[in-house]
Image 1 (tube, protein in one colour):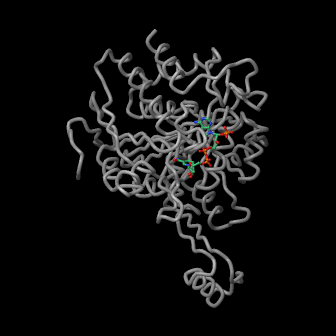
Image 2 (cartoon, protein in one colour):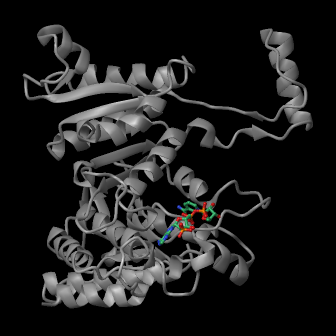
Image 3 (cartoon, protein in one colour):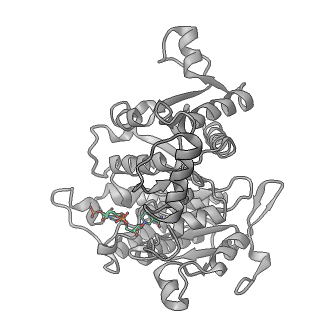
Length: 415
Ligand code: NAP
């Protein structure tokens, strides 16, 4: 493989545990649009926190790889194999948002990366930071971790444009062999949801909930309408919970049967419950406190991620990671996209990228550094030192630039 070196600085996996050298190489993809601005801010803050936490005894070597617009301009390729190979090799990477190319063989570079690396768990913690303007009356009640399945559902990429020979063939097959009626001018998409992938993401969500002392895992689905795909997601989710975690969990219906009340968790065990997706959209706003870890199929997971982020300040503050817990590979990235109208102006909110970096530090076990970053971010926001997306909702507050926000966090880390 080209351009890949420093084996001693490589993060490795042994006996399902990460082995992290003091000076790991971590691939960095700056991304498109606001990506370079927010990633630069994140690196400034993360480097400072690591230096401060370990007195210079640890350091991350960020190694830049290309993807997206910059790669297309430099090499004519949207997503070079070298970039994918680097994440395979170094295991963990940080990335900014990437433009979705239109009509160039990729449905989405992000989806391609997640699928090629089998990063099946999209993990998105959503928590309120005091001082952030919110539309909720009690935003501090929202503290959820979203586990979105990343490899299946309508994101699988099996889709045929209307009136093409492939769409016509599928329509004819469904009509002639299965007796289904579909309009001849329909586009067709396929929605696979497997037992394997559902159990894998639910297992990851429950393991996370147990490890972090969370109270409940809610399986979100639309099984009332899509009985075998979304209904399968619900059924297989409960199967994992009941067959693999029996001693640690209790289902909501078991609590109800035993106590005639769904409000109490008498056994102090992890509660497994399920909600229909449309109901979940209102529940998270109206009964915020009752939700903790959520596990969802790909598309609903995408929708709920932005909804939940909006409740605590918006996409500028929503971090994320794409993880394969078995191989240890992980790609950390903000939930937001490239926000092209703010590109290269040094005004986007870098908190989502910075907090994605916090997730990365926690993932490699550098918690002392991650705590410093969290403290710095919290203090800046408390002092109304915020970028435009927040300042415009806070009367009398002047926005600061992306780079100024990062510098201020560094000053907090260093004091
Ligand atoms: P977006 O880039 O996330 O931006 C939507 C809106 O969210 C922005 O116009 C802005 O709202 C707000 N926003 C997002 N990030 C912000 C930040 N850091 N600071 C302040 N405000 C922020 O979504 P999009 O416009 O739908 O998508 C643009 C491109 O990004 C598309 O090509 C899409 O495919 C791609 N995308 C990539 C990823 C990824 O790489 N993981 C994820 C999503 C989308 P206001 O206009 O209200 O200020």
